[in-house]
Image (cartoon, rainbow over all chains, first blue to last red; front, side):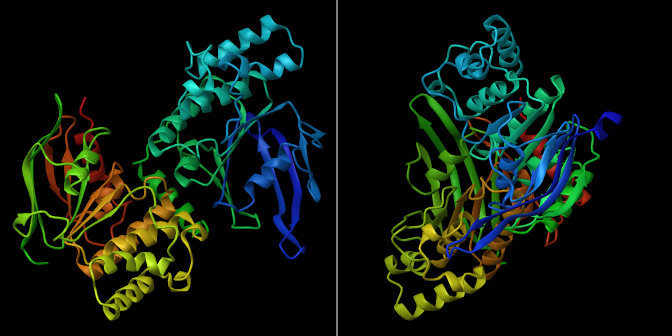
Length: 255
Length: 247
């Protein structure tokens, strides 16, 4: 796919430190450079608390790097950019708004045309399989359904890049697995450039076109894997299992 | 491994009102055997476990340990569940000692066993830590260690690694195998993860959908340590997966 090699996001020599308990500066993210290609599903994989969320916050413009920069389609990211859609583990749905109102919150705030954004929102509500739940409130939804609202909300803002930060971390194993299937279906219907953060090796292998493996804290890139297995992926396929073994052995165990 | 029958489940049946959950389940477990129970979601695995722990009484049928009806006051039945259940007001060492104190094991012997388990789990430096200072996997190891500490007649484990990722899962599975070999306990391990079942078990009991019956009693003849990428392993996994896909 030639499209794959068009760089949308360029991360150059990003570093970030924080003061530790003794007041000394301690490195959280150590000199990271990577390219994100157009239309790819890029997974950032690392053990818990390795610094990948700090990296993600800098990519999203929520935090300034100490060194280096993030460039999206040629423009440097210095503050939060509405062209980056974000999906978090804690969905942040407003409990007093319906599903539809939660999803259309951004465009409404920006004063876009109601007719246009409602149509768009409906398209994504249908795409994530929540047709019929437009008027439901978050408390009426399961964990998996709430995540789907979060995804529809991100998509409705028509982002250039979709960033998902461990969105399924709080779900039980079976719901998690079915959400991974959902995400694949969604991506197939509406291809986007996606950066997906996880600490779960199997999830990374199910979803990623490329997997960037991070070290333990402070975060450095340990290895980049090209996953050349066609989707949908079979977890009992030998190639899948061999790659899972390789990545597993290469991952720092967070005991 | 002695051929003696340790556990006998005899025509175990459980009804809740009109709902028949477990339908005439019978099987035996030999002393020191490690068996896994798998089945479709919602088939009654947890109800089955609750009957074994005597939280529920069966509607009919019986559970025998060493040829007598199972009695938690007499027999040592230990459990490990999915939510780490370390007692937060006790240190790691005190948690491991807890069951032993209840069984009135003398102090010398308690110390010996706890030291042995701490060493096996590589947690000697954490003996004075409190559960809230531990990571999830460290806490799970304490739970497992505690379960083995009473040299139980029967050790029941219900999806203890359900929430963990593959690397941690394999690590903890190896830990439980290590303790099992060391103590020779009889283990019934319930899981919905078929790879895990085949990695751990000498025999796999496959339950059918509700009302649950035993669909198959499958021997796993793979030498240890087992290679999850080997053809035989994958074959077995595919076979069991097919057996569970009922509809």
